[in-house]
Image 1 (cartoon, rainbow, N blue to C red):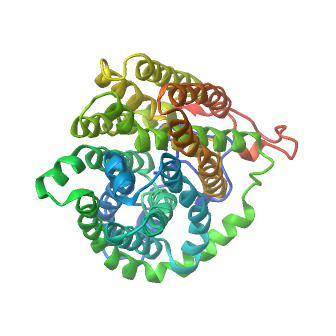
Image 2 (image 1 turned 180 degrees about the vertical axis):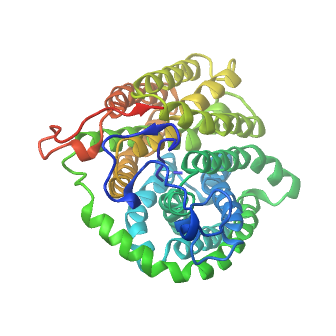
Length: 462
């Protein structure tokens, strides 16, 4: 929410194959005879070696629960932004700062995630991340001023950032033969959590009658539940941490340089523009509808519709994109839906509210597309790890000014015309850069000047 994906390993094979089988993006060979080890279905023999048989089934549940908690801290606040602003005395500019905090935390703490994982282990860091999400959600309702509210929010967002980066790595580590399906599962769970928080936060708040503080704090219960399965997983995986650390260090040393790759920069910028659109939508779309005369409850439902579109499409888009040598057409199609949605918000925000929410929901599925392209643009495991960290961290940094600028424009003009026009304008470079990022190239084939060297054979479709 917010990681790293790879193409469907059973559908696409790249040539030439890496010499090291641990780095091969294709399907691992089936172990036979003495090499075969019993393990949970869907996990390769090497992935589950030395772990209890319950590990992978519990890990699957834990991944789904973690993904469900990667966005409610953001979208629940979007649904109650007006009440939160009034309760804490925020100006529109300060509220804009608040909507920029998520990408800032994702960028800063996302950079630290690989190093922490090497030191403490993947499962242990995700467990800590889920605990941080819970602690922030518990503390946020007790904040007496804007600074304390921002600090509590940052704690939750730090946990989200760590989990954002490491969940796809966990999928690659323990589900080497099910990367596409597991990525789709976690993307769908994240979309469900995002839309659910947008849809039910206002009705829940009205039902309990406790005001915006109670409405935001209720999501801590869901986060606490998600921490539970990660505790035994972190303990069980402790013995594999040293081996993972050595392998990850070797991969990091062997991986290509991101700063010299035009493809890496294109992916980072595309990720940044789609994140800009997503966080503007999550932070401000309910307010746009409410200012147009839509009720608070309906505005939350409209945001939920936008976020819910990611449930089916987050599973479909990675599968379709992974079978295409060039993802540019999907980039253009999603961008066109976004431009149509913004046009509707500009000319008739209330009249066609449900249609605009649907169109923007389709456009926001640029996130699973970006994650999929990260997996397709690197040939080796080392390249994917470094490309994922670079594209996400750099992309989130790029996305920081957008929500803040929208808040400033809204504060200055007291109208949504100019902010919506800016949203639409930002979609144009997103499309152009996304087309460049979707070209069938791998970062390992790009030299210091951006020129290709070595093999540039295109992916072969089975």
